[in-house]
Image 1 (cartoon, each protein chain N blue to C red):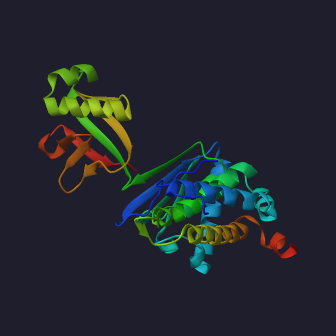
Image 2: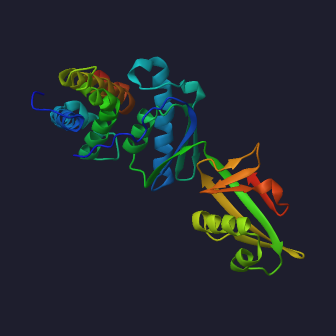
Length: 101
Length: 189
């Protein structure tokens, strides 16, 4: 996060990190198997959700008013992503399939 | 990669929000609505997993053909719902309204008068109102009864009618419906 100097750059960097994380996730495959949208679209929507949640924090991660550091915002985004994936696993993967994982 | 911020950014005050998602077929709409109910149940058990300021008990879900309608009073905390509406099946459209209204706006004119002629012979305010309604709701349904004609427009969208004041807010125009005996506004069924 050292090269990031503005909220837009920070949100872009977070988006890229989230996409990377999701592209390696096996959970995404299992979730998408039960949806009518494709993997790319699912990842896109999930990243949007997380970005909406940290948008305001990113605005205050730079001077003149710093409430959270860029790294803290990124970590928060990753935590939110985990919560959202857990939510989607509960919603879109049947109990039986979840139990067999 | 694209991201959209501000779409449903929570605000400092609450409003009655309505999300309307239209799908390719009724089957998709049914499966989305079913998932929405499941999500509301999940919210009750795992409230911390959701970004919300409302209780699942206060939310309303309904289906109207290919449309799924979600309604709740919130300061804009709708991201979980919106995500579900877009994930379970891809909607053809997804609209968000504040204080959603579904109205029938009627105007009585002499029989045989066309919409265009009405704009010429009526008062300026009325003509402006007709122009706005035609632009935003399309040509009116025309009902002929004895010696009169009724123009009827169906409107769905953000709040435009103030029931207390009897005023229609049509763009910049504040149309005082209560001053005109030939105009009426009713909620659609």
